[in-house]
Length: 255
Image (cartoon, rainbow, N blue to C red; front, side, top):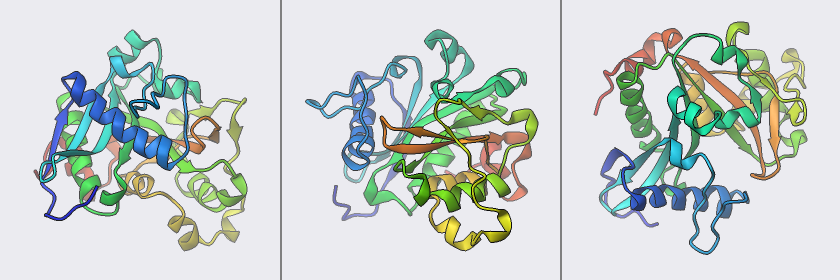
């Protein structure tokens, strides 16, 4: 994908099969081709990353209309959608009981990715603005979802995981916990021994964006060998957003 003209971003919710396939095609490019992931429903012939939750959720698309392409996606699951699907996607990796019992209105964020040519620019800002409107429209209290580090070698991730554990652990009332069969402790390096700057460099841009919005993480990382990732569960209480960014999640985001 070659970007020559300035991008012309637009957000939409997929309402057609072609729009859904555009999301799955970008997911294939990122999760399968780039990151080496797999899955029982991945369609290698049509190059589509598909899973069983796709029919039950909303798919938010970020378009660059200057080249007529989908360059970013979010998969959004509200409680009534999870009920129809039988569970939240994250429940395969984390015990979500603290969130489900909280009585708060939840939104699971999943399968989020941005085309490699658009990372580090305005694309994430536009995706977050689209998410802001969705959160406002559906009166969401708490957002959550698994976010990934590339690779499953914990020795290479011990610094950023330790930083997340020491500085960004969720309050106990919302602290979900990774399932024992895939859980890896994130309390690896003592906080006093951490090089915070070095650790932050290793944290993916999307996770850092969540942290800037006041996001916190659950207890323990989950190693997902199918997707060749190490996952953390991010949690964002919209009532606790810091002042600088709270306007994004109250429907006053700039368009």
